[in-house]
Length: 257
Image (cartoon, rainbow, N blue to C red; front, side, top):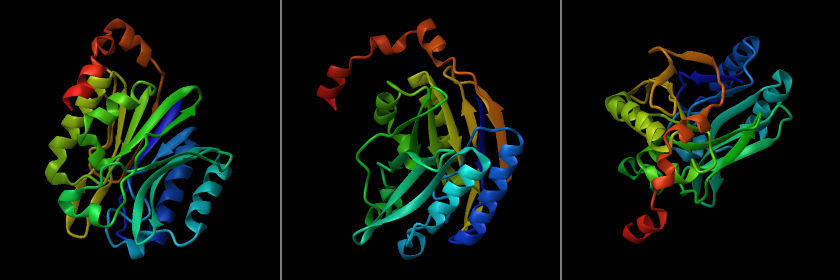
């Protein structure tokens, strides 16, 4: 399976410009025969708590992505914002080549340190999707700091996507936690970050893929970049060779949490 991920330079709160860039990267990925492409968190706007500007007021932009998936016969993972009462939800969705939603995840952990929880409602469920008999799950940015949800997701998932707007000043946390989640869960981890400056915050990207042994198998350069790689699902091979999950004490962990 050929997978692409895009380290997008997001134009802050400029949906039209970002949709143009998304279209361009999807076309590039398709020319390289990619079957799926993943974009960062809040792909249309960048990370903003100005929910009046970021929420989708109609289905127009979502339909652009759906048509893009159909016309290029490719799966597309992207971040967007949905309104709910007087607040919003931070979504990450995957659309199939038939133009159908096969995954819709809402960020479970709004970033309270920055006040995200004042504007965004937390999600309350995991999300999974299948492509070519490969089981994926997805989380968003700050979720990366909470290992329990990864342990739960990796009971089913061979690959976990983390879509983010993760700032450069905490890049070492990003890289360390991605690697740790791969090793702990014995699954592939794909970290898809943005690049560039948004509202005086620099995002260095550092998008990368770790295998279940914690080794980097590919990464993006420090620029807006698209990475395409061939994926062969050998997750179960790692788990059988070193069966860590069989020693987990899940009932005990519930008692002490």
